[in-house]
Length: 390
Image: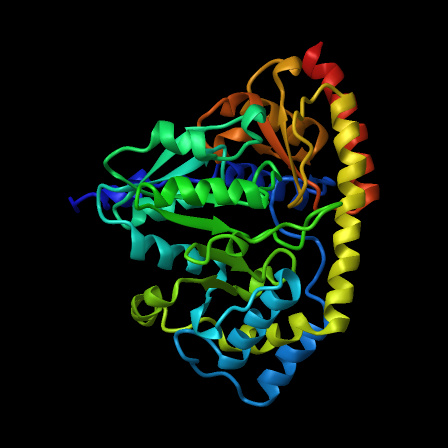
């Protein structure tokens, strides 16, 4: 008999939502009209100027490897974007272009975490964060957060949960699954708390650009030594192109470049050439129109779900998710998700995918469908609740 697979592989949990997605696809293949509110992927196709740039790159034969750090022109464009959006002067040499935001997280985890050490992470939070730490033989210390903490880590929680094995903290702003955003004061307090403990601050800014009624601030405005993860997937709508970036302190870049060379050689070349069009005025105009569409969806779905008994204590300021407490509806979040998929063909995500803290009484809705589809989803949920509670 062959030896079992690695302990690290067995320790990485599956996405519970993937089982629901597989079932949703089965129902769809059988002819049912399934409304997908479970997956964190924008429903808009990649903007036409970006697609055209990718097609031009293919026609020009740009199909080989690039440097591990990425195309110089793209790193320059990303640095310029920080100047445009945040008024920051970022040296392009600090920018690493990566295969998705996941590539940036992989590099940062491998660089900063030794076996047996951990980062502090908010619970609930994006599950792959803790799984990447496990992959490099590190760990995640999950810190329960809720409405009183705005679903975010803060200096007080760092002080309470820091121990001898802690080496840093990862926060996300806007956050998945809650849409909660951190301000400059929050970043400053977190930075001070971590520096006092010789810890690293890592910030996921993947949902920047997708905020409503305000603009998210970058941690780099107050802490130039922070590690910043970002992606072309969400605001820029390039999910399948698999492209992201990392802004790192200058002294970390040689080590990160070495890791990149060994782990994945380089990010996809065609995607990098296409992404050069992301920062053009005509592209940004399209993306801002899409941000407004997401705002309209949030402003419809938030009161609609609250009116049906879902408790959404903190209004999300960013991303495209609503994280809802189902306590008033009764039952278990996973069973509720299964019920609505089978009975009303509405798919949403159980809280089990985002951590452990009160996970069985929360679900996440992604408003990544057009308004008419969201309206239909609310009608189906209202109808289904009569049977669920009856």
